[in-house]
Amino acid sequence: MTLRDALGIEHPIVLGPFGGLSSIELVAAVSDAGGLGSYGLYGYAPERIRETIAALRQATDRPFAVNLWLPTGDEVTPDDIDLTAASTAAAPLFDELGVPVPAPPRRFLPDPDEQLQAVLEGAPAVLSVVYGVPSAALVTAAHERGIRITGTVTTVAEARAMDAAGVDAIVASGAEAAGHRVSFLVPAEQSLVGTFALVPQVADAVSVPVIAAGGIADRRGVAAAFALGASGVQVGTAFLRTRQSAASDAHRQAIAASTDTTTVLTRAMSGRLSRGIPNRAVRTLEAADATAPFPAQNWLTGQFRAEAGKRGLGEYQSLWAGQSAALATRDDAGDVFAELLAGIPRG
Image 1 (cartoon, rainbow, N blue to C red):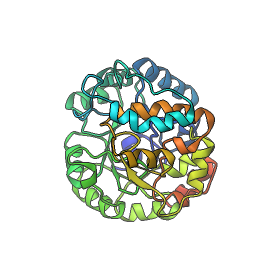
Image 2 (image 1 turned 30 degrees about the vertical axis):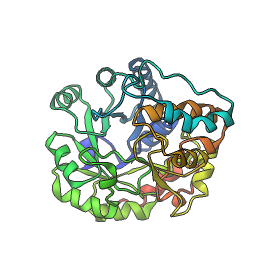
Image 3 (image 1 turned 90 degrees about the horizontal axis):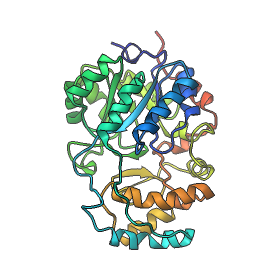
């Protein structure tokens, strides 16, 4: 089965789901072009999920995906952790922005079961998941509602587990990719397989279409992905650079100024390993070496990141970007899509 058939799309090009940086406009632009626009719902309460799916349906009549993080079981709650050390480490950043270090909330994240239920009720064309394998009950419930499911993997072992769960397609995410390393069988530091090595091995190991992700930003990357056995591509940074994304101008400028060696892997901003462009916030937190576990660290930095976003201060934001950032040269989503489409094999 082709990816087009598996996901009901015209072109096998998938927008990377940006947790916190997704926009209705960008999702609609990719879906309207015949690809699969994707919207990251990380941290969204159920009502906001329903509202977002309704807004996406208003913006496009083509298939789109929404993305959720599955619980891994090691997430901490406010009752589990003393945030004193992490808060002290972050205090200089709060001081520089003129905002107080906040008290911990009642909870760091919405209930994941309630999030999933809201997605099932909204019935998008595709539900994509990261950080784990969807349960048999979730796969059945989604398929009963006509929702396809994709899962993201970073190793061949994860791909086999995902395939056995009955998903409709698998995203093979190489270590070059922007944002969080969504490994779930062994620690992310032990799962850093590059796209060129990962994609063909996953394609050989599973029975469903494989979507290559990580380091793909133009027609050359697309052609290479298909040559490696992929049935489609997922692209993040090249679309994040465009004016249709929810990235700040400072974030776009940081991507535009990147080279092949600019990005780093760090746990400083969220407590989980992620790839992005180092800045004042990352350097300060790494030097202090007091990072709290996820999601406590993500909540803590989110308090000053929100203020920095309002003021366009890139030195205090999470500047997610992949190793192909220097190839992300276009500022219009339609132009990015056309470039990627040119790399898809014909026939």
